[in-house]
Length: 88
Image (cartoon, rainbow, N blue to C red; front, side):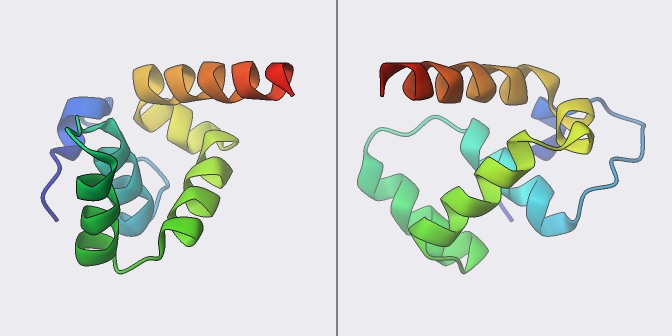
């Protein structure tokens, strides 16, 4: 797993998240030059389809454990999600 999970989390506290959940958050927190690079990393690093990845990520945004683990990232993604819902 390549992403630096510690960059996005409160270090030293048990997260209550699985290794895959932490890897999804770490991957989502990385910067991407192209959408293709991100999609490729999802398949290669996590072994997930893009659809399943976004289902897992969306579920994580509703979990308090994810918020405690990566508060800046989760809050940013929640704001983006709410903005998209409001635009519909």
